[in-house]
Image 1: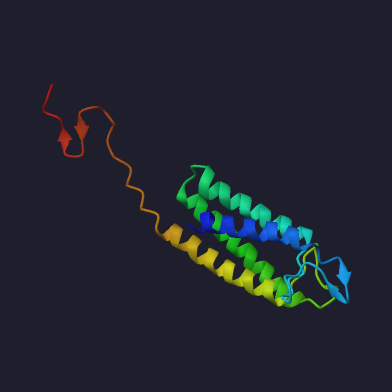
Image 2: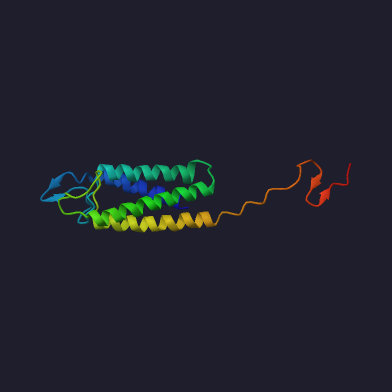
Length: 157
């Protein structure tokens, strides 16, 4: 469910970020990539990251018939990535001129908070998916010969 829902969320965020511009453009002492008065300092690198996450989650959630366990692990990985980005963002921080950052990413508080929230939801969703996996039935003992069941050989000939 996370993969399906958040594929759309990351698609909207990524496309919206492309429309808002890049934090590398400074105007009036403030970097671009913002939404009105909300400081986001979006960059092309962050927009591409969001679109890649959207694509991966869409493939896992909608297009491929892959086991739920694999989707759960993928969602966990997305959660870990988002938490790592948030922690890095809180450590690195940002300023009005968007002079702080690394790897083409900037980390204003709003982005860090969203990363933490989305990351926690991903971790919980991934763990719930893995915990919800039904136990595999034990392997059948026996030779696999037709007519032989767990209760014994068949009486019909």
